[in-house]
Length: 245
Ligand SMILES: [Zn+2]
Ligand SMILES: [Zn+2]
Image (spheres, rainbow, N blue to C red):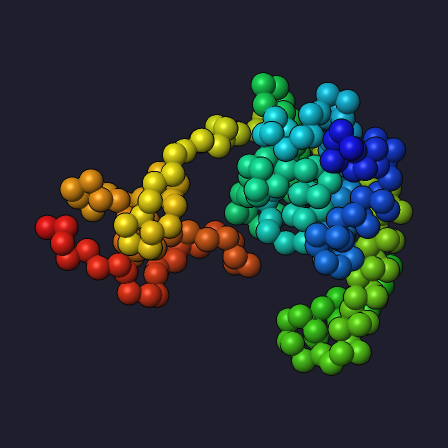
């Protein structure tokens, strides 16, 4: 196939939300309201941007700025093709169900946000969904049967959401996105500590032409996790640097 994303592109152009949801579940692992909302926001936002002019090849022309690291974000990654790995995705740690799509070189993009009333729509489609989330995910007190019921209810509510009119669930507005520069192409250097190849921008100079990776230098680093972007301390003993002085 010429374009590995042709299936998605066709589905977006045809507004085929069910197809996009099924394909999203391949990476997300389950059907749920959050990923369904990410799918809907993306299909709508990309068509508003003008899908015909969108390269959608993961080469950082099309950018997505997603404001939450929850199920929603996987709908965005799958449908838009803007991912963590191709640097088309910017994760802004704001905890909002919203995404902005922009094209480099164009001043104006679109921001799609989920309206706060979405939970009522989920409950209407599946009254058991949120109580099951409490039990199985939050309290971790459910059994196998509860987990299976949650999967079923997640699927039911996801497919119900995509039937709803867009305006019931979302607001869309034009936005002037603050895009980062293209991801830098950096050289690799060999860390003398772990002997692994490291991006040259991710080393700490420890004198006399020696540069250690953050891990070996025991330097703080940042990681994306459930709670957002957090600073972390190394727990392991850093590589010995006694011969630097
Ligand atoms: Zn999910
Ligand atoms: Zn190292």
